[in-house]
Length: 324
Image (tube, rainbow, N blue to C red; front, top):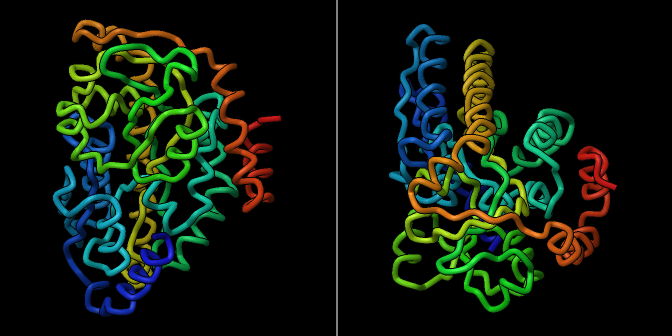
């Protein structure tokens, strides 16, 4: 699947003409719904970029997956149909496998640690890899540290997950984590998740509190176990052909918009983790802490798997994250 998507991306890039680099309208696409930090940050990006370019470029923010799911948006971005997308770690990992390593279980102790790693040499290296597939990473926004929600019980111990059907994003790392925990994981697009949970296709799912709340998933899966099992970034990705057609001043505006909107989005994510719990409790959600030591022990095999394929990257990530 990874190689097919990469081939499609490279082919699409070749078809993108020079004219699209001169487009007055910049399409900024993403899959988040109103109220989500990603949605708000995309609107902020548009305002900053438009002001910075003195109105030379306008921005059309295509929200709520109106231009396809994350994988489809990445393909369209490589083709120059979409200029910028605030995307997801899992689909990006199909193109740049090393990005998936950011989701190694319990890698980052908190959000600021993850951001420090992404804003340094690790992020630069991932950008270099993405450019080989026709994509330019403008920066990394946040998609939080993830927890598990289920229909009718807490999952405080890994054994509580045995046999449960858990929805994951299209991300092999997440699937591997839940396989190690004894669950029955399966990927599904975010836009299809609420109806799949309501119909009983899944027993639960995993997401940061911000995403859970913005989609009202606590109404369907009210048992929230604070596992904190993995981190996910929101890579903000541009069409490389579009990017290379910009003058230096416009490139600087795109980076400025990504950085400033990203700071706001990260702050919202950090604040949400501290403040959403009381609100969600009022909406009927129930919370429990997981036995993190048991979860960490149960997912050690995931590190073993990826260290075989990417020994240097895994070692550098662990060192940068302060993980022994």
